[in-house]
Length: 491
Image (tube, rainbow, N blue to C red; front, side, top):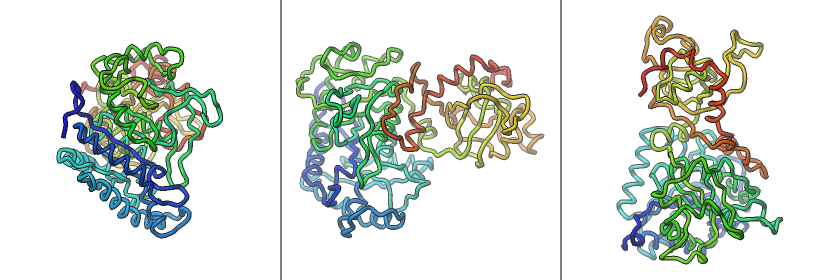
């Protein structure tokens, strides 16, 4: 195995393939030409010293072909049965193609419940890392045979982003049926301009009307959701065409050959448009977040068209990413602005800062944290103990159940034992069990794509900036007067 491109370090590369890239939408026959090129590309990356993970959809599509079923059924048990049939043949197909090049592969099947359990999450990460160290290419898919709506990721775009964050990948490739993102639908607008680099997803204005195939569950909007998840964890995300997977190698060389970020600042006439955010300059030492002025290994004119989402300069990783994106919240804690300031200052959440609680959850379950601008003197007609909008600022694992928090909210920590008869902790949530959403640039969210309906997860992840709105609430709220001291010692 050769070392990576001279002067650059080996990369961890995740390649996500949708069902439409694996099987024909009408005949359900495997697209052997594309799959063979993917295999060649992955093996070439391995020979260049990189570590490769493939996130592969297609189990149900392959199952449809095996059982000669024309249309994707709607009944869950039939879908799960087809997934069980198709997954065997899908992995066999991958193994057969890779075996021609003497490249070992391994199967990893995951559901959201696997991610939600911390020990299983770590076990999955350790297994993938060990496979990579052994020179094996892991092939990851959602376990559709067991997954139901409550524990599904919803689409493999999301699964690929979580996988990339889990293993600290450098690059995530989301393969699709178009070259890149456009500001308009290129099929109906000849003047549509490609978007080459996205620095701030919150300011992105792009066409997302490309829907998923009849066999798949994704579309362009889910890829933007995945890009947001991955870049928040420090993973550079690329959208490019699946029918020409050889482009991946050229794009990797292009990114590795990057030496300057100045070409992002002022795009010249005729170059692909760039979404820029001057309030978040990226560091010159991060090669993956730079554009290219001169390349030793590859001429710029030969760079395949693609859209690259730059990673966050302040990534959320490991336990904090797991809390924020790996867990499904079971309820909501409404806190005052003083408590939010304490959290930003790295303090834990004390009972005195909790205004209200919603939902039913047990101890150590995940909840949303929402800031409210003003605490009402008494409950209003709707029963709420606060006025104004609630702005989500993060997620947390609580030390108490919803019933217990309802009894101790608004009280000093010293009163917890007298209210409950015991005191497991002075904090409703420890600071290491709280993950705050990344603050977006001013105006973030104003350009969120609206040219196609977003799926539920997309609406959640692509919501307008919460931290920025919470700061506005701080300016008008209690200013921290409701806190117990400084909201607890910083952790």
